[in-house]
Every structure is written in C-alpha cells, then in structure tokens.
Length: 78
Image 1: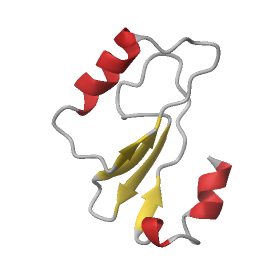
Image 2: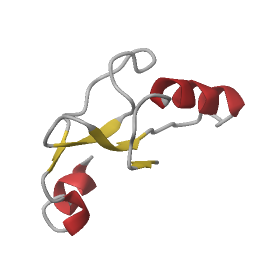
Image 3: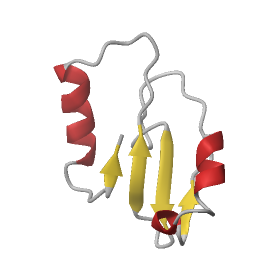
C-alpha cells in the first residue's frame, strides 16, 4: 500500500486515479475486489492487487477472483 502512495503521483498511468484505503479483513473480500484497489475518478475499478501470505494459489482461488470480476472491466489485476 505504501508503495502505491508513492507511485500514484509520479506515474502518468495513475493520473486522476485514487487509492482506496486499505480495509482490515477477517474473512474473504465481500465488498471489494482485492486487498489494494485503485479506482478512476468515476469510481470504476482500475487496478486491483490481491495479496496472499502462506496460501497456495490454486484453481479455486483463480475461479473465485474470475467470478468476482466477470462483469467488471479492470485495467490490470495483480
């Protein structure tokens, strides 16, 4: 999150974008798309970062993310 605070004002890619305040989660992301979210000025998701620690990435995790974003255009998902 801290690195995005530095990157946003310095790169043209992030011009007119806003970083959503990091939320504390105790379960799966119910109200957002990922752990770090950058939105356009008209509140459309622009870049989403999902962070996992000691959790293997498997097909179920990928399918869950794909289902969450199936009707949303997001420029980049990391």
